[in-house]
Structures are given as structure tokens and as C-alpha cells.
Image (cartoon, rainbow, N blue to C red):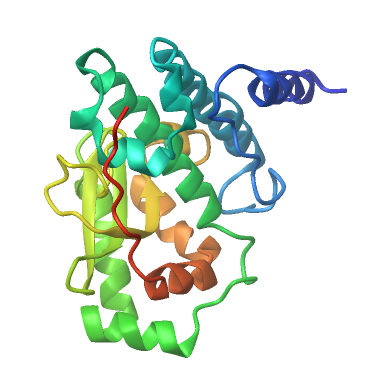
Length: 234
Ligand SMILES: [Fe+2]
């Protein structure tokens, strides 16, 4: 077995059987499934090291408050101000990291397997003028994010689709988000997501992303009724 594969297997075993409720979700496709748009090596490092680190660090942050292992991750990150003060930053960074990466890996699919339906095309036209205008605005948001962060397509409280970006591991579900809404699509614009293949060319990575979006999942998330908010008590 190649050294990278052995290490990957070891890390996955550690994550699956380590303490705590939060586990590293496996990728919903093979590491090379998004080639040539996202390469297999990037996927290995991104999922098995970066994503795994967020899972492990979230679990470590919750060690003092093990009852929080039982909470739903979405509820945790929506209610950070209600958590014990000493773990708020760690949950924001690492809980956000786990949620965002799960979302990102699940919103992609091998090229050509999950095309955009005419119904989704119509919704994007209604909200942005055209699909091309939507993509251009999303790409501008990806380039405009200074440093590390995420670009999102969200459904806001009025049901309108909007494009926003968040810094670091923040996301539109968090209390501190300037614009809140239900995420329906995201692009990771941390350098670790693209640097091995694209180097400094974030624009090329953002453009390539359109080939591997799971549009069926985007449409499903847009159609999904809003989740009833649950107050978090610990
Ligand atoms: Fe990432």
C-alpha cells in the first residue's frame, strides 16, 4: 500500500473510532472522482487532514462539556453565544469547519452526473437575470473574499436566493453572519482547497467548480422547508 493511502486509512480509523459524537464523514465519491477539476491529491489532503483536524479539534473543544456531543452540529453553530464562553471561539472555528466541509464535499459530484434542471435554471434566472449572471456574481464573490473563507448561495428568510461570502470558517447559519439564510451551495476558497493544482489562480478554480456542482442537491435544498428552530440549552 502506498504511504499516502496507509496514512489516510489510519486517520480514517482514528476519526471513526475516536471519542466524541462528531465523526469524519467519508467522501460521497472516490478521491479521484472530481478529476480533472479537483485532483485526487488535493482531495486526500483536504478531506483526510484539514477536514479531519476540524472534527478532532471540535471534539477536543467539547471535552469539558460532554453533554454537547449529543447536540446536533447545526444547532451548535446556530447558537454559539449560548455556549460556555471558553469554547465559543473553538466551536465557531472548528464546528464551522466541520459543517462547511461536510456541505462542500456533498454539494459536488463527478462531472456531468448531476446537471442543472430547467426548473432550477428558471429560479436562477428569476433571482439573478441569467445563469451566466449568477455564475459571474458567485465568481466575483470568490475572488473578492480577502484571505480565507467561503462563498455561498443562500435562501434568505423571504425565500430569495442571494450570494454572500463569509470569512474563516463562519457560515450563514451563525448569529454573527451579516446576512443569514439557508445554505444551498458553497465554494471553499481557502488556499488548501485549490493551491496544489491552481496555485494562486483562485479564479480558475472557481470557474472549474461549475463542472462538478451537484445541481440536483442544490435544487433539493432550495425546495426544502425551513427547519424549525430549536433553542439550545446545555
Ligand atoms: Fe477547506
